[in-house]
Image (cartoon, rainbow, N blue to C red; front, side):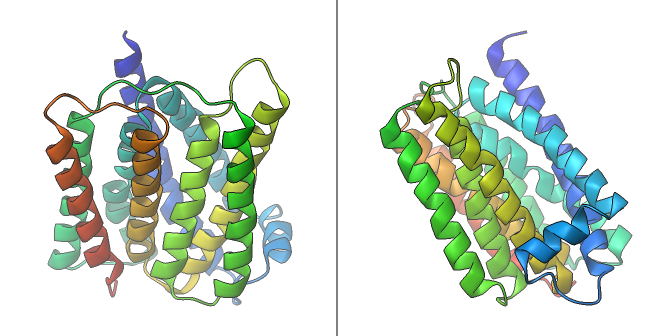
Length: 267
């Protein structure tokens, strides 16, 4: 099995885990009467809730597979594969009594089709980055995300989903800096991975407490796809198949437009 095929399979299985876990996460967070607006209290309650811990286990399994995809294929392709969790989430959202309208399903189809188009144009991944020039901005990104989250924790679900997507994007970027041997810069990048993940998990839970699962998930997915895609190609050396640059661009635009449409869902 080639690295490309292994990366594709790892990303697809991770997408399935993330898609189902998202709906289970919504179910867990909605059982609480109050929105989890305080991070520490949210963590304290979550570690005592079996369903939330099951969700965390699913996310951890998906994250390991996602990391494999990040190391084996271009970052934008790894993120595009993970974004295929959206149709899984849309299908599973019926478990929390959400019914999507035909327009919502068109949005899901646009996101999925756009991401498939992006995947078809993928080339070779760039090198793993382990320098301080990479690690320090990643950590500063964690600080910035926490600051914005504290200010915007009362924002509506789609905006919180967007913030969560930026956090997951930061986590994916940080993974590119984790390699062997464990030099100080590598350790710093590695510590940023769970930090981004924790804050993003909280923001995503906040958004789904009072907003539609799919409407909160769609902008999150676009955020975690577009940002790493751009940084991977511009700064990290990720390649695009010859002649496919316009197709990749169209795919990303299509996915973004679909996510905007789904984020308006009244499910």
